[in-house]
Length: 124
Image 1 (cartoon, rainbow, N blue to C red):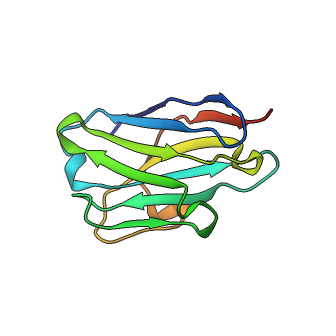
Image 2: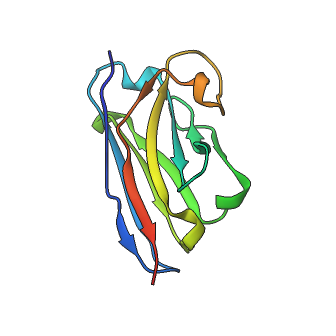
């Protein structure tokens, strides 16, 4: 059982930046593809970004391309989401997720382990 814990959320002004972190508990972290999802107020949870096991492939939803960057450091069993040029519509609870199966995933049921989420609020 993998435990995931997000951190780094908070309140930021439009145009600002935040870096989210997701720390894993297990030694098999490097065998998982990782992703960030988010759920805004009154919205369904949606895919934001994902990264392959060794970081060679990354995917982003269109609304964050050029503004968000996903990365990972397997030695630290941590995945990051660097968010820049934040907009009010980025306000959401951000969740980290791990996929144990081979290949990329973009839907919630493609992922097997989830963190509890961290709140990001973009407001002036």
